[in-house]
Image 1 (cartoon, rainbow, N blue to C red):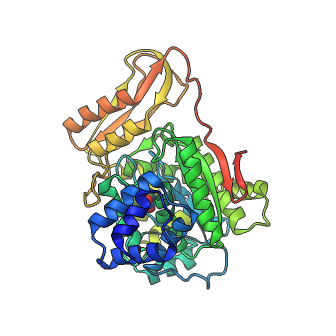
Image 2: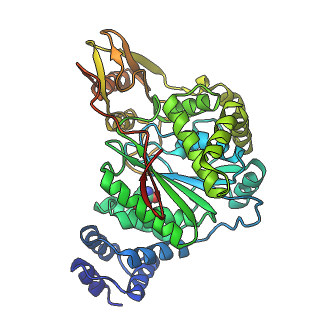
Image 3: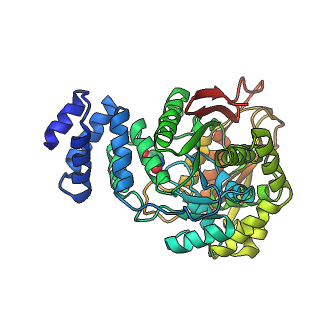
Length: 443
Ligand code: URA
């Protein structure tokens, strides 16, 4: 394999042979291929794409570069969910204990927030003491005892993806669908699952806003999973507005706990039940969708999922006293209510403006090594289509100081659009279900 030839071939749109691509990737992992050559290859892939066979080599090389969990001894289906990330997306915190409660093992490996989206690990760490870095043997013990465990990607999982992602991040080559699919799926395949649900967000606040590209990503990831014998389903879900009312780490954790206690909000509750039911039918194909949804609803409404969450918090070292009283999670020093300067209908709640607002307040990252202020963010008091009177609260800003409050108020006011009539259309909460057989409207 001659590295310059691989780069030139991709630049001309040629397919790279399996042997050459494998050698190129392993050379990059061990340092023989320098960053500048891999950057040139990635940029060529950005313009020319990768076909199915090349994507398969990517997945195999990333997965094979690290270790894989071995969870075959667990007596039940092992199903996880991965979200491509959105603003206010705190589903995982409610879903992991709920899916465990309906009989699944959920070995959840999540990420940290980057850019305008927050991450599950940061939200969990808003609970004092909650440990997201635990040795794999302890992770497996908690998983078998509690039914779910939640940690970050360890050093041992897919190191090639880690090294490639760091380079993609600084060379403008993240948005390449086959690369994203390989990156996400290599980490999920390392979890030794029997089923995987993918929540692919669509809309202005999503990592990939356009529906056709989100469909393509979902289809590619489903094919990668199914080709390797992993039952995989993707849902396209709305990110043209934030999910729920809370945006910002501790505020989102508090909202997730309230949802586990049966206090909504409706969209978060509905999406979590739909996803738990999908996970159950992935793990137990003999259970009908209706029955799966009934079991998930019952497990949430009975308080059993909340109890399971408390067991998880305790097992991972979190303060159960705080988790039981989510109002204690809000640690921001300052807050202010923003009111409407005029009457009208809410025609837009910009997820991106709010997500970027959290970063500006110190609660999100632009670089992976940043420490966050977990308490800052927004509670939005209005939803799309609401009729608002002048002076009515639009939401609350939580910040670390007065300058942050002023900045947050400007962000919140700018994020909410008021018009003379209700919004023309909002995306359905779940619009499509993508399986190995194709993409179908949901519901
Ligand atoms: N998330 C990942 O894990 N990888 C990507 O390439 C993009 C998003």
